[in-house]
Length: 188
Image (cartoon, rainbow, N blue to C red; front, top):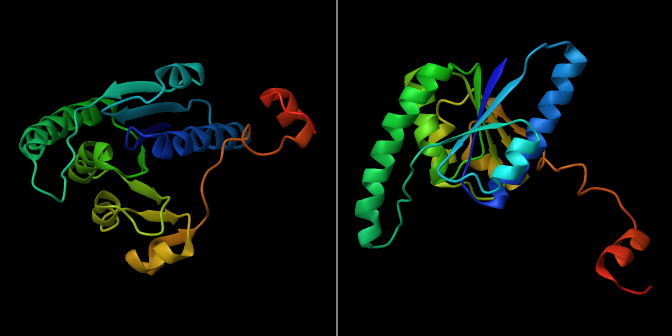
């Protein structure tokens, strides 16, 4: 199974993608899926070492941010976005993923646009109470929409939206006060 992961270049998109990829690998192991090929497509890897460490391939795709205010950067970013769509179409056509999992953000637009044109199923996850423009657009053709906060449900079609919370990496959950004191050099 090949899954294309995409999202903005910030930690708010990146770390939930890592948590999701680990959960996907556990499910694949449990279900006996022999091969799980994960590919992350974005304009910026955020942490390329982390991707390599957990076996996720990275493909850089240019993407431009469309600001809601007047800026010359909107002009140059328009060209980045068009180039990103062309590159993403080519890359997605070559890779032929079974599904695209998107966290949203401007950097996910080229991959999502390519998935739409090539009729590849899309699942999106929205981490905020008010979704961004890319996720609101992608929800129109996504097979499923996952949300982290119940308030976000009003922006998406009810029949394909599920409240699941935010994916969290296991190393973030747990621990105890004594471990934290040692790590941060604090006294209890």
